[in-house]
Image 1 (tube, rainbow, N blue to C red):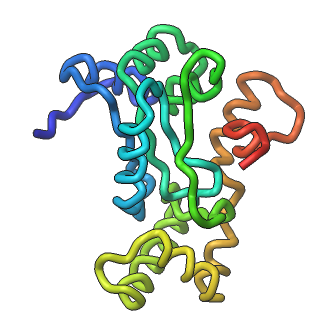
Image 2: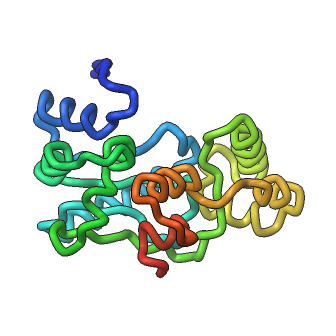
Length: 202
């Protein structure tokens, strides 16, 4: 069943909370439309870790995963806490920072990656990103057939000079979110996604 919900465009957290309450969903698995190359294997591994670690409030991917394999799981109780308390625009728009920024309050964990793909970005936010994603899909089909996954993308970006050149023209990872947080908190130091999400460690 697919039921559309017409909520505030920038309050994605509010939309998630409304749907979770309406349908009684718990936990919630979040995948995003800007990650069309998300490997189902990653979602399955995340789900398996969630089920073998009871009591988690939030489970995301470790910083060694590529930007483009983003997915996460969180409890309805934690989601509703965020919905009722979060006021920053960045927290409302991006759904879960309110949770993973407070590990002292919420029980959070991350799924490790067997390779270090932290330098890779193939999420889709611009027309240029879509061109890269399409090139990766085409090369992936040629390399491994229909069921190619994140390891094939890693191999392609590592071994194909043309694809790597397209990839390396991208701006820093999640730069718009980083700019939004800096503006909200009037922070003058140099911020990165890694420092905001993982405290500068991977």
